Image (cartoon, rainbow, N blue to C red):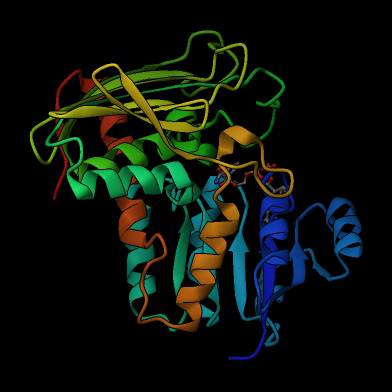
Length: 340
Ligand SMILES: NC(=O)c1ccc[n+]([C@@H]2O[C@H](COP(=O)([O-])OP(=O)(O)OC[C@H]3O[C@@H](n4cnc5c(N)ncnc54)[C@H](O)[C@@H]3O)[C@@H](O)[C@H]2O)c1
């Protein structure tokens, strides 16, 4: 396969991470940028030395484009993923895969008959600390899983939720804290534990009440497939963006992620197992540094589809199901079972 030409749709906050990752990925180059904001998009395209399109449908007719990265608001993911797959492109989409599980089902149908690979951006799975946790759990080093706790405390004020913008509205963001920020944490918890069977939780808005329709705070208890429980707390009402704090309690020790470092704790002994490095481009540290790894992994699969190691639609659907179940649980104040 010759060098692959890539187009990015959406030239907002996250697109710079994709540009930086592509610059570090052999055999791919940025061919086009697409944004409905022509002034911003065209200026950025000039800076990157690539083509600019204002209409993504027009970009999809460009036969020189092999792959499309989707970096747009949540409500546009489904239509853009389906259109890009129908146009025969390889597709790498930002999370969440869609606004709901119903949208995920439509995307699954489109992906089943498509030539292109669909990869989803759950880049925190590629952090060295995440990989080390998976390896430790697979090795059985800390024994059987007894429990897990995770706390995500970030800061998002009124400026982030601009009036008239897509964030903070059910129709365009699909929720806020859970579906946008904490989906990564929930995905890691279920991935580390090997799946979630049921959840009970609550979401609410506190400091942003009256500013957003959606939630800025959440807590939940997750029942894992092996029978252990996980406790989860998240908010965007903190004064700063703190690194994810996560602990896994095993029969023979604990794994603790703090300040982007992974420690193994056995009795009074602490051993440093892994550390995440500063991210590429303009990625902020708390997003994790995995965009480059996730994107490189995606193109490895595109070149050799017998290596399905990228984060797939089914992986993304697991995280989406937990998010949706917590929203539902909060409404009806009941445990919600997840289909296995
Ligand atoms: N993986 C991560 O850690 C991470 C971090 C931040 C954001 N994201 C995700 O990235 C996506 C974008 O978020 P953002 O913060 O960059 O948003 P943003 O609002 O900063 O940027 C979105 C861009 O899309 C453009 N756009 C809107 N409609 C369009 C259309 N029809 N055609 C072309 N362009 C269009 C907007 O003009 C804007 O430039 C979201 O899915 C978000 O959840 C992921």
